[in-house]
Length: 116
Image (tube, rainbow, N blue to C red; front, side, top):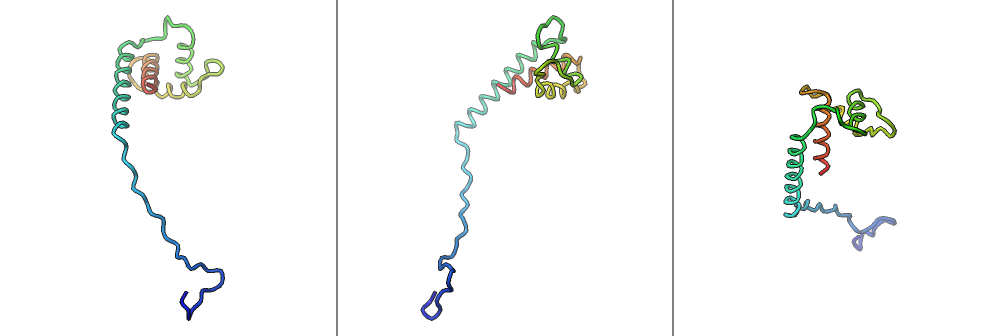
């Protein structure tokens, strides 16, 4: 306010300023190196698993045939049923190459490699 114009009651004399936008920082050099290393290990892991994957579920005991069958028909193998794994493997059962068991085994290899 100026001497001839006083400010009105309740109004601030300070003009609000817009917040400054800071530029997004770039990733540090080590982050990209670690990412490349992780992807390389995952690809190597998948290559090893893909060459050793079984064409069927025969001869396996335990959860492997149960989960494969549940993924093929989108059912529940047994409690707890592993619903996330069954849904993910069901997507692999749609690929039109090889037997259903081989596709689901390749899906297991891919998901395992992605977790690495």
